[in-house]
Length: 209
Image (cartoon, rainbow, N blue to C red; front, side, top):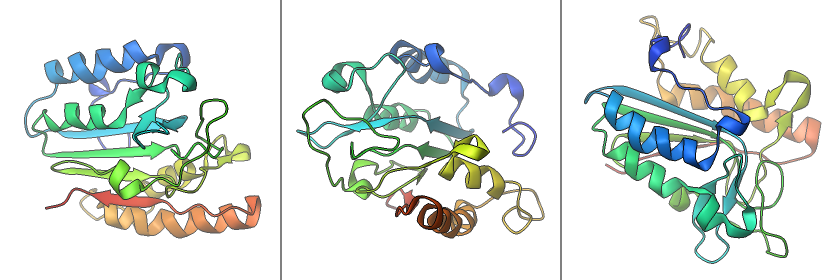
């Protein structure tokens, strides 16, 4: 974010492990962001970790460090809530990159014991608001793979390669999400099939105009 995309280091917040609890999510999305982000800013949110569905409502949740999948409504962080908070900031653009999956079928998603995985309508469950673009690691019925030898999720590995690829980055240093998606989608699909015998199709979801 700082070296390639030019975000000032003082504007970058990193939450890891036991510093990525639900209260941390609430603190930074609901208090730090409104206090620190100026109207017209560009916002980039990246989440790598487990997602989970509410089996009853089909809503998608991020799974913080201290979450319990059996009580995901109370202990998870609602994706809809995060979108609502981001939408109130009057930013110029918001990009949300999610290296998670939300069906509960394994990979980077979890589910309450005894519950059945969902075939989630990802376009609906992750539907962004206003000037937001969402890059998701997989479709609603798929799992998101970990690329162990590269030390990243498979989606994240090609996301990082893409933002440094000269065919993606424009001469003025900017990146269009459509160009980044066109680069990473076939790469992720190919490695998922060949290495993991798994179908993984990243999704680009834009707010309806």
